[in-house]
Image (cartoon, rainbow over all chains, first blue to last red; front, side):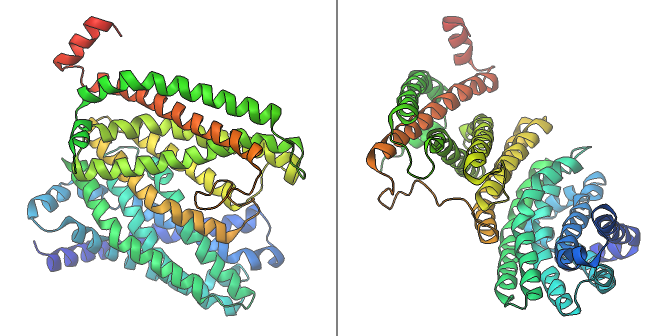
Length: 220
Length: 248
């Protein structure tokens, strides 16, 4: 096994398990549907709240997608192969997270214009929402991968993982919705987007190391 | 530089004996200072010209809130030590301090709510500091939850170290993000680098109760660590001797 072959096989197996991607997407749509039903369907409420609603749904959908990302590898012994392969676990984690990110975020960006319309998001703000998702979600995936690696050996790890990871998502959500709000008020929003990108870069640099430590401890 | 103290800290036996000398002292001196600070603050310090008597809760609220943050910082450092140097006592420290810090965060939230009612008119506002203490409390809960969920000791220690280290890296980001998001709370009371903005007779009791609370928490943590060390080293000879000599 080398990095290239690993990435290829990971990519192919993700492509062939389309249901997982679809599930994350459906979950995203479902959470968004709850807001008009549960709070208020009028455009006076939805239009200013749309950015926040989209981001809450995104964070939850990504947590759901990330939660199980090592489960199968743990059960079928692939993680032990990682340890035996002599390759850097951090880089393998990076490749896996990257593949996952592409598989979840690209479809999400594709349905986003439709959902934005349903939430009465002004067309001028749509671009900012998409940029914020593009720049902010890598952080969510990388931070989430630590939690997934820690709880992979537990049978009921999902709730624990949510409890561990969700507080760490707060800065991303704050800055992303801040950017959208600034755009809706026709103010400058590049600062918030830059911070989002910075958080993602820090997460990209540090999380694979922590996830590798967690995987080693989990497999043992 | 002399590093013996650092290496000694790696030995549970040495720590146990050191803590049996210092744990009790810390707790009692801390309690005494806390009592002095609180009585002085609640009974004798002058009233605030704006908030009247209601400001007096500061003598509980501020030390508790500061301690809640310090405990998490200490846990993060211990997590780093545990992962890098694999020191035996670091995970014991994290496990023992987490509940102390969680309780401090909870008291800070409750006393803050009680203070908020007369000054802001509501029990809770979605203000930066309140929210970040709430998040801090949730982080503590996460550390304790994963501690309880994992049965394997070695794995649990690693996991807890990772979680506290990641939490500590995130804590300032969370703090600044919510601060940027919304601020109503008055600025920090304690600043090491600046002269205190309140008069001496209001500030001194606060210092007393803060130092007292720190000592108290340190002593209680030592006690908790001692218990944990006895648990973990129960097969070692020195523990058997210790128990036979002094009982439990």
